[in-house]
Figure 1 (tube, rainbow, N blue to C red):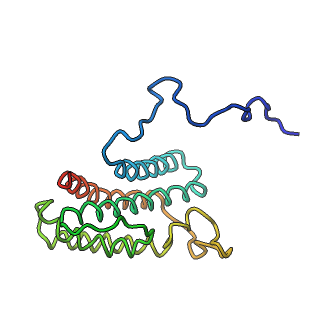
Figure 2 (tube, rainbow, N blue to C red):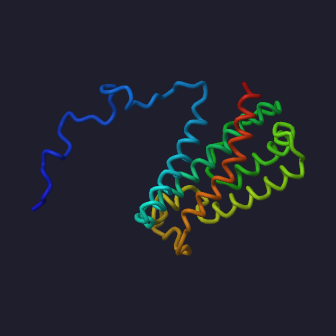
Figure 3 (cartoon, rainbow, N blue to C red):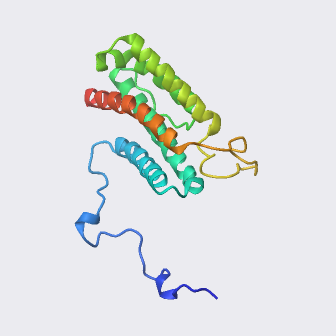
Length: 199
């Protein structure tokens, strides 16, 4: 016998999405020319909030690691796609919006764009940009080695029932967040400068 009160369970007529209620509880969708940046930043922020909760409360590490890593991965994927789209537009070499989830492929398209745009946009030497891009490439490759197709942190097994992440035993979530913040500082700065130029 369940102890729960059946009246607290979903009832016929309940809705998930509504426009009723206090306006302070509302999220506004489609309020900007381009929502891709909102999506990217939203995933990163959600990952940060989960890491903050885990490290402050010292619990739920083993369950929240999956949404944390998945949110961070999706942030990176969306940000790279936006940089490819907007950067290629600035360079007058428009590319189709990337459909791949593969970091290797996305970085192969994104890196040359950033090598051309970033030094001037950021007013720093090309060597500094090159070193930063090399570091970001290594971090993306590390992430891709764990989760090449954006599935490993969403499901325990692949479509053939083969275990994913079977070679990983521990992940330091605080360190993951700190390294993601380093990547974000560069990617957000260049994304903002590129998006302003692309308008």
